[in-house]
Length: 140
Image (cartoon, rainbow, N blue to C red; front, side, top):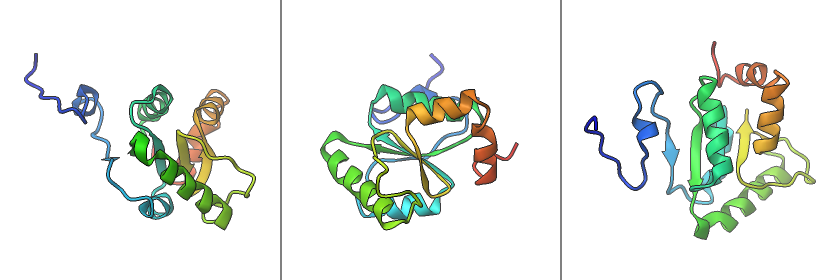
């Protein structure tokens, strides 16, 4: 072992020197979600420990993007999803009121981009990298 200490909220992946440390929010309040979405070029909001959230995060990290990640505990999930729905209905994210919000939710440039299916499909079609560059989440 290389002497890495792993806390319950941290995995060895986050401490790997090959990848930059990503910022993970765990204790943000439901009211802070709107501010986080508006102020960050890319944010992934997902359930703590969810395999789909993990896939989204790994795909973005593999592209060289260091997304802000908001891991939601099970007991706070309903409040966060309600806040995301409110954000979308009020127009802050630029989405129509018909847009459903499910976790993981990826916001790009303050707008609801979608979940794992949308991220994967745009990556496969080659459209994801230009979108990320456009909003300043990817510089290369």
